[in-house]
Image 1: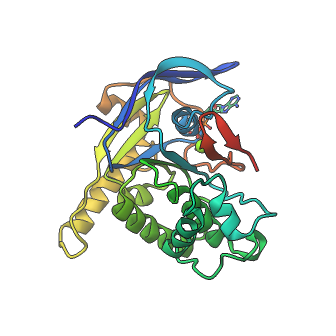
Image 2 (image 1 turned 90 degrees about the vertical axis):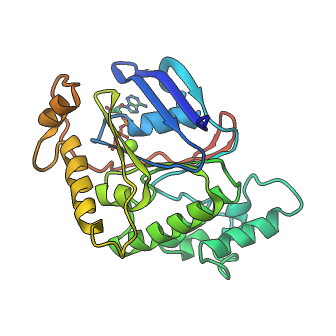
Length: 276
Ligand SMILES: Nc1ncnc2c1ncn2[C@@H]1O[C@H](COP(=O)(O)OP(=O)(O)OP(=O)(O)O)[C@@H](O)[C@H]1O
Ligand SMILES: [Mg+2]
């Protein structure tokens, strides 16, 4: 099957720094891919390149993405002067825009909060509005950069369930940037690990149903493998890279550092971005 996302030999650099050094990536229609990698490995740079939001970077390579794509970032950054419904309808066309926006809010379990102001919502609720705003556009590709990174553990688990349901129903292809190996295993069909500017490894994640007695053992095996590739736990990154046959200069950046600030945006059209 022809992939819905195709990236070939993608190179990106900032003024003083090369970040992506020949990335190749395919994503199939409806496939859920988790993008893992140490802090500073270029995950957000790759995601922004796919979303056509990387005006600060220069580079080369071939990117094919579907026209209908949505982006969700770590911070919902809703427009504070618009009510919840207005935020979801932002940039929506068509006579049925309001009906669709209301339905999307119901899908994220926020029916009844249409008239609330963003400041009246919890962090998790705001993030659900951001998800509704993305999904109401019925994207063929959802790009999500640590969308649950700022949420507490329980809200995260709820959001996982929600995203799983929504993606199973609407079936967009998803590229989810995450630091959380368990989140990747829980949600994704495949993990892609980025390191030193390249894809270090791709790992299929399909787990059997919860009722399967082998599930926990398979989960533990995948977890250990991914942590090893990220240089955390047994089999540090250098060992992992040797195993994958791509050892390069050791990284100085410690793993698992969360960004203090995230870039926030809503893709409205090609090259257009709302920055809150
Ligand atoms: N606008 C920019 N100007 C200069 N350098 C940048 C810019 N954006 C990112 N970089 C650098 O590019 C590298 C990759 O950044 P990127 O944000 O893609 O990493 P990341 O994998 O998303 O990290 P994190 O997990 O911490 O979010 C970093 O070293 C970063 O400092
Ligand atoms: Mg990032």
